[in-house]
Image 1 (cartoon, protein in one colour):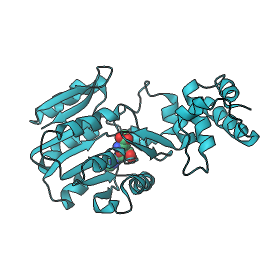
Image 2 (tube, protein in one colour):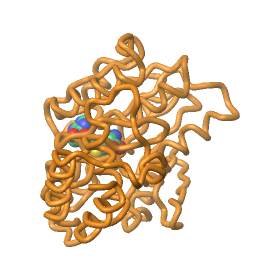
Image 3 (tube, helix red, strand yellow):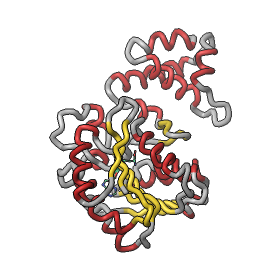
Image 4 (cartoon, helix red, strand yellow):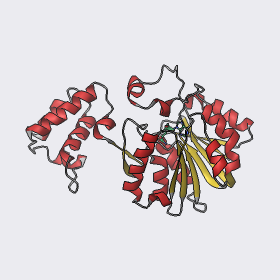
Length: 289
Ligand SMILES: C[S@@+](CC[C@H](N)C(=O)[O-])C[C@H]1O[C@@H](n2cnc3c(N)ncnc32)[C@H](O)[C@@H]1O
């Protein structure tokens, strides 16, 4: 079967861009050096695909049409400037989180480069690893409760930052999911230049969480364990000042529907706050100093 005909068939059950990504994934398997891009695929629409590859991509398209996330089928997601390995152990990197990354990058564009950063909730490692690859002198301390997520983050760090990554990325495994900064406060020397987090912030009863997210993404990445959707924000508002240097800032992804309520809490605790929008104009990142 030709590439063109295969894509036409797949598009009967899944969107065009997903059909292209699944076909590229299958054609790239076992090709370490000559990896096909979407651009090449489209310019090779007459290329013949082997029967086994056609069958393999049909199987993936069937799984996709049954709701399995595309990223669990391809095993990767692009974020910032790199491709990240993902699995069911980690939150699939979201495009909104690139706004959080951009805010941290821009904050240090005109100032001296950051030397020490702290991330709460490392997940697949996207934020800490992107920052480390951007700021060569930076050292990050990152906390994470899930051992399996830490494994994924370590694999990503090794591929993107190189085998020497532990010299700049220190990971603390948190044992109690309700702890936010307790472990860091008792072990780390303060004076971080920034703290950032995209914490679990959904309400357990929320009707708005899509079924695919509930079924396939780790519950610990979505919902705070104790059921209080603002748990991480409240703890960070109370405890993080002690860890920041005089010019230090806190960067947080926030749910747009509850952004004002979260801002009020930070202001009550004495922080100066700024909300930044995502591309659709909704408040998405809270910067506190
Ligand atoms: C919303 S995900 C964000 C992951 C990643 N930073 C990102 O932006 O894609 C939140 C992460 O926090 C982790 N987590 C949950 N409770 C935690 C805790 N008490 N301390 C540290 N990490 C925690 C979850 O396992 C999950 O990986």
